[in-house]
Length: 129
Image 1 (tube, helix red, strand yellow):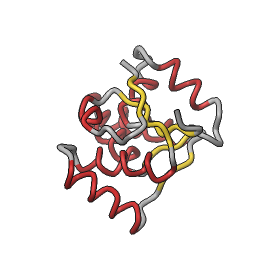
Image 2 (tube, rainbow, N blue to C red):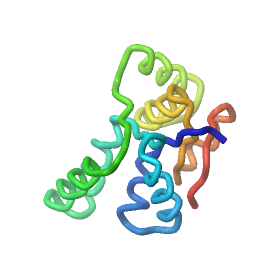
Image 3 (cartoon, rainbow, N blue to C red):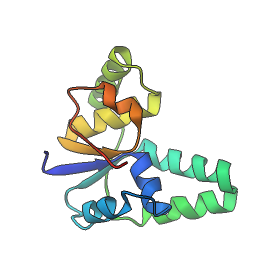
Image 4 (spheres, helix red, strand yellow):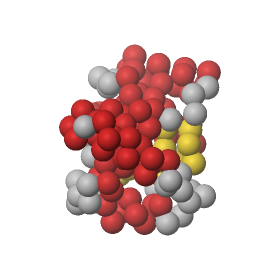
C-alpha cells in the first residue's frame, strides 16, 4: 500500500453522508500531508449534491470540501496524458480517468466506492464498501 492516499469523489461523499467507510476517510484526513484529491472532485461534489438536494446544499457541501485538509492535484499536461491513457484503455467515465490518473501521478492509494475502478489492475486502490 502506498504512503499517500487520494480520495475519490465517492469517498468524499461517504464522509459527508456518514456512510460505511467514513471512518477510513477520517483516518486518511488525519494525515493532511499524505491525503490528496483530484481537482475534478470539487465539481463532482458540487453538482451531485446540488442535483440531489438543491443548490444551497450543493454550495454548502462545496464549501465544506474546501475546508478539508487536502492536497489538491490540479490539471497539468502530464496528468492530461495519463488520464487520456486510462480513458483509452479502460471503460471509465471522464472524471474517473482524471481521478485514477491523479492517484497514480502522486503515488497514492485510491480510496473509493466506485466499481468502475476495479477494472484497473495496475491502480493501487482500497474499496470503502
